Amino acid sequence: VIIKCSHAISSYNTILWYQQSIADTNLKLIGFAFYKNPTIEDQFKEHFEIRGDGEIEASLQLLSDPENSAVYYCAASKTQ
Image (cartoon, rainbow, N blue to C red; front, top):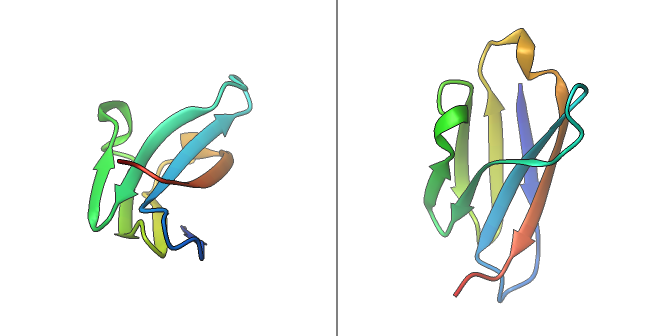
């Protein structure tokens, strides 16, 4: 599964990805695309891949793992 996210705010350079599972409704940061440099939090490295350019678009790929059933959110941000 690949989820895509994009924005058109020229001053924003980061797209962040969050997971909200059924068992735990807190949002967990999976990782982010800052310009063309993706970063994934350690606990998610085996389960997800982030690609793209935080200035325009990014994608989150869910690697084959049935425990990843959840709601996923993306957010655009301006990082300095």
